[in-house]
Amino acid sequence: MKSGFVALIGRPNAGKSTLLNALLQTKLAIVSDKPQTTRNAIRGIFNDEESQIIFIDTPGIHKPIHTLGSQMNKQAYAQMSGVDIVYYIVDATSPYGSGDEFVLNLIQEVGCKVFLVLNKIDGLTKEEITNVLLQWNKRGNFSEIIPISALTQENLQELLLTTKQHLEDGVMYYPKDQKSDYPEQFIISEIIREKIIYLTYDEVPHSIAVVIEKMGRKKGVLWMSCLILVDRDSLKGIIIGHSGNMIKKIGQLSRQELEGIFGEKIFLELFVRVEKDWRNKKAKLQQLGYIALEVDDE
Ligand SMILES: Nc1nc2c(ncn2[C@@H]2O[C@H](COP(=O)(O)OP(=O)(O)OP(=O)(O)O)[C@@H](O)[C@H]2O)c(=O)[nH]1
Ligand SMILES: [Mg+2]
Image (tube, rainbow, N blue to C red; front, side, top):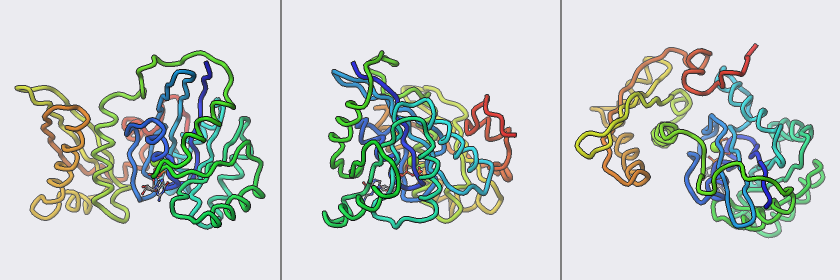
């Protein structure tokens, strides 16, 4: 059987997490229209009769302004080595700029095959797709260039097929029925974070973190006590909202989705706490799982 590791690399908002979910046909990573949504490397394990492919979603590479941002970049860089293929995912509808050039230069240095994945082609005409393809073809050396739409799932079978053709025969790394390797608490906190990103604007989505403090079962109801961290006093009021409206909405949307995932009734308790400047505090970032313990920042 064919097996191997594929890292999904690119700038924020290129559609990496949307692609991971589409390839796995499951929501493993949260998605939003605001950049810098993904903060961790997230593994999705694809299985079929002839292959096992471990796809690794990563945070979008960007110019960091906090320690959190530089750690997110580090996580993306770390996934570029030790994999069989890097998918370099770009938004084919947005013009080429200095951010693309920066990531492209990094990508040219990786020691494995690179597929250029031109995403969001649902927004382009055939002629525009051909033009984008020709322009990108001149910019670098890619093993394959594949236009796709992660959103409409156009050309994803082609992407999978080509990927398998490039992988070697290998072993299975995970049991066949396993789709990911993160703990339950991770997806719960991510879904709550996704709802906050959806409901808030400007700096707010970037300034929050969610921690599951306690979970349990009482009288057939799964209850979760969750803490929303904000990095300054003024944001506490925004998350709570007028007469508690915002936190109520966050709770409702999160509960709806979590009940769908867990298939049972959920009671969600949300608290907000100010943790000043948490995005620049290494110990806090470690506690929140945004810095792997073995990573040395100095
Ligand atoms: N039209 C269109 N939109 C897409 C496509 N793929 C992703 N999007 C949208 O692009 C936005 C960003 O998608 P994400 O999957 O969160 O992007 P990402 O690369 O994971 O972003 P970061 O986690 O911030 O690095 C969302 O609004 C998606 O719905 C696509 O193929 N077509
Ligand atoms: Mg993402």
